[in-house]
Amino acid sequence: MWRLIALAFVGSSVVVNAQIKKQFSVENSSQCGEVYLKLRAKTGNCFIRPSQNQDILNIYSNQNLEEYTHSFSNEIKGNTCTVKLSLQQDSNHGVGQKISYKMFGSEGVPSDKFWKVYLTETTPYTLDLDYGLGNANIDLSGLSVKKLRINTASADVNISYSTGIENKIDMDTFFVKVDMGSLNARQLNLAKSKVVVADVGFGNMFLDFSARPTVRNRVVGSVGAGNLVIQLPDADVPVVVTINESWLCSISLSNSLKKIAPNKYANAAYTKDGKDALVFDLDVSMGKIVFREKVN
Figure (tube, rainbow, N blue to C red):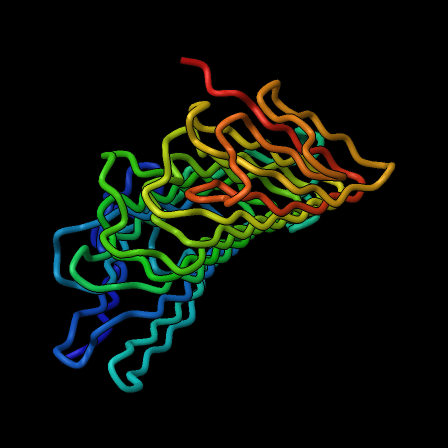
């Protein structure tokens, strides 16, 4: 039976001394061939980790249930289990004050309250993750992710494959969007994604392509007034870059990238047939794009 379990804290109500307890658990089902998970964390700190547990979703926290608000829904259509969960930490500080803290270093103190989210390694996921304010650390090691979408408003997000275990299936799209926050995506070769889409508004984004991709990558990027930094792989990996730029932007190319056509650059390993090339199609208006060489 597929069900949601919400457990309240037992014991001390003092947050500083509160033990970490399970808040939500969504059990797996024989009907569930894959999972669409939409998780929205409006405030606070959120961690995502793989788990050998069979449950689709397990969430732990150091908060009491009455200290935050949430909404939950789930349904099964065909063989897809759709889980939608929104979490919001209650706070005396308004959104304006939190943005002021992020931009100017005043009006507030970063919270020590968090959610720890565990996903099973046994079921394929489509992940739709939305972060407002705070921090998010996402470890995708050994998961089976078909599609990934991450949007951050003013949160700082870190994505990694900490154990070095790649995605168990080929990923269709790895989509990341930054408004005013920051996002660091490391070891992108382990995502096995056919397409990487990067959208930068006023914030900062770092994409790590330093290791040879196991699946041919096409990277589509758009930069408004923010910064996009791209770490390139070894010189023997063919790379081709097309940049649609404006006179208000700033472009910093690595020494290995040479102009081969208007707005088009490539390294020495690239050939005209484009076989196994790492392809970048980028647009930038007022922001900055930086390509970094790999340092061996």
